[in-house]
Length: 385
Ligand code: MG
Image (cartoon, rainbow, N blue to C red; front, top):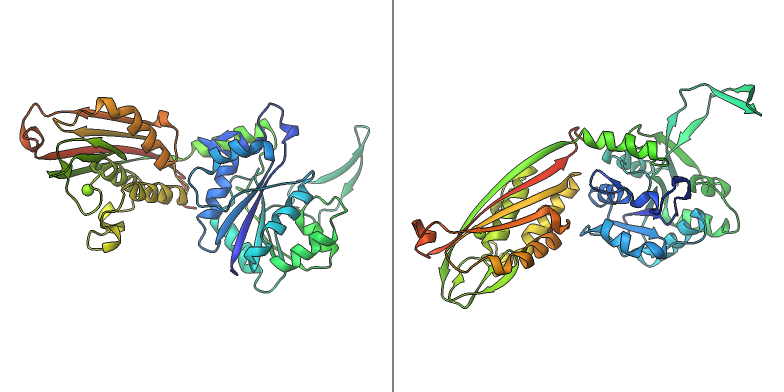
């Protein structure tokens, strides 16, 4: 396939962290730590695919973290980080990428510029390592006493993602399989591969301790909350059911429209697009385009939710009101909530569905059609990233 694949190393048990949940699955800013990095790579224009290497015990946690991000299926890791990376690389052989980025799941904020720098450095080097200078004075000590000062010239702090040409790093990992090295640059060095230093990013912090998680959380709190509004109407035509919020509701009429005319999902889709400043449903899915004729509207909402995630957004909540005399909404409310949550990739507790009438007034009161209003809230990075 060529191109670049991001391999997210998430198989660790996070024993240094304490507690029952491995650190990469702890919640940060409304979603698991690992979900942040997976979204960052999945949304990067120069990254074609993303695969996570996970611990087999974490399959369910992983599914929750992956949501509906477009990712390759995860593969199980090994007993050590190095073995997990090698198994991940072996799993990519059939896909034959040109380049691979290897990233630690515990770093939730690999920014798009950093990812781009690492990939671009592989144009003329088999390896690329993002690094930061050491600004603190470095001491050597033993038994609680300083024994020397280490010159920090030429010393760097290594980050991930570390980038490599795929064939080179695969061969290097196979050759180093019996050893226990701390990062992939060390594996590359051992095989004599040149690894270019590229500028790292202070925001690309590693979540190792509870303090780190709190610090990362504060950064996340600096995000801003956006609200979007959606409104839609579809008229009744002959038929025996209506699609409302992804549920087929029996009725003595159907809703007319280019797609399945799901007025609820259309309003929600517009609300999500509105919150992230991405226009409206008609721009993304023009009624003039035959591809969307008869389309099931979950496609529209899933697309909008994906756009929000691509921009670093976290869908906080969705509230929709369906306005009609009939059919009655109440009996279907729970199923609608679950379906919307499933499509948008969020928990059901973040979705609300209401039904109301207009006291037989107006077009909805005359049972000529159904209207829907929706509000969506999205938390987004307040800094341009
Ligand atoms: Mg519509």
